[in-house]
Amino acid sequence: MTMESLGDILRRISARSIARTTNGGGAAHPPEPAEADRCATCNGSGWVTRRMPVGHPEFGQAVPCPSCHDDKESPSRRESLRRYSNLGSLSHVTFAATRTEGPLADPGARRMFTEAFAQAATYAEDPQGWLVLTGPSGSGKTHLAAAIANRCIERQQTTFFIMVADLLDHLRAAYAPDSQTTYDELFEQVRNVPLLVLDDLGVHSATPWAQEKLFQVIYHRHNNNLPTVVTVRGPLARLDESLRTRLEAADGRSTVLQLGHFNTRLALGIGEVRPEMLERMKFTNFNPAGSPKATEKDRDTLAHAVSAARTFATFPEGWLLLTGARGSGKTHLAVAIAGESLQQGGQVFFAFVPTLLDHLRTTYSPNSMVGFDELFEQVLNVPLLILDDLGAENSTPWAEEKLYQIIVHRHEARLATVITTASTMEELEDAKPRIASRLVDWLVVDWVPIDAPNYRDQR
Image 1 (tube, rainbow, N blue to C red):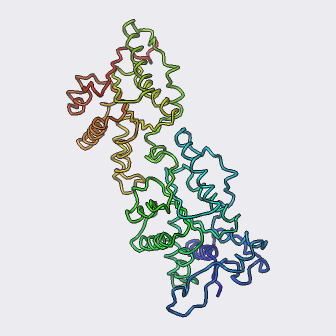
Image 2: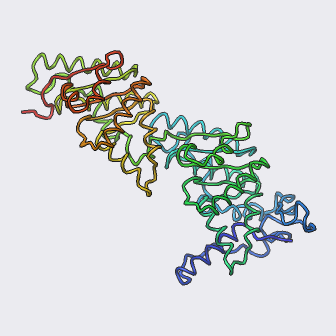
Image 3: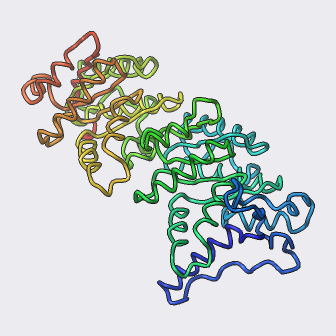
């Protein structure tokens, strides 16, 4: 008994959906392969079902077509596999055409991608167990997953690639009264395909029914140790616990690879130091002579500030508090510290304090791509946090409390932190007494006051 291929099923379901919404005006689908090129046993699907009595454990179960799999050199075999795979425009993605350093700029992310690239290429030669790729949007997860799928097709292994949200949509569509494909037929193929690639797990909007179907696919493949590649945008901690425990499988059947730091792009565009700032604000182009109005005493404080900042950049331990009037060079030195840390492969979260608090409030929105807990966790625990312009925020009680929680957590954990402020210590003690009490702890905080006129005033 032959079965229709997943690629055909999904194309037909999509075509029917398009016809309903566009009156048949959707984009044309790829032409069907010539009849002569199709396998006579499975009609080009790559799958058959065995004739078994009702009640038999293998009744209705899809298995790879013996004719296709026995005839590895058939000229139609690879094209049939590619058509079945659902890769579409990703069919051209290969390891050979991929830059091993990855798409992100910071050195740490590049090292992560290089390591993941090597492990993914090894996995593609003999897929065993599960491979889970995590990371922020744009870190190369889908690219590596597609490269694995294409390599497996080259090796004549049946592979199916699909975004999780699309899979759930297609399963729902298979329940439609006019569907020519039964739900069981589609579901069975997804559960048992030799290599399944699930892209973007965790970003779909799941109903309880859809979530249950997804669990069934993942549980079945995990319990039967079927090779599976999963990409997850963001940390695994965001996922349902029952999903996460299978993806992290402590029994050695699952390998989790992180691509990029989660603060690289994930957190609503906050946390990253803009490239033009890194280029403009380096130690090498900081002018310790100050503005034309600077006195010798002013220049002494600038020289001390540069020395303290360089030392912190080399050994980022404890806290560095840079205080001084606006335009005195505080932000320049803070960005220079960030640049040095990034060059060494460190993780840095740089934020203008008022903007950070605005984003924390934004994450409470139901439409936010980043949850409050996720962003807050990044700020709490990033190896190096730089808070620029403390005191410039117009604080609500809620924002003030969140800021205080950040300060307390990092102070007690002795996590490397740089803070700049135009406020004097007396002003901070008056406006933010709880925060100020942490900033005067000289066992943790190196307070560097900059007493110099505004650099921007060159009159």
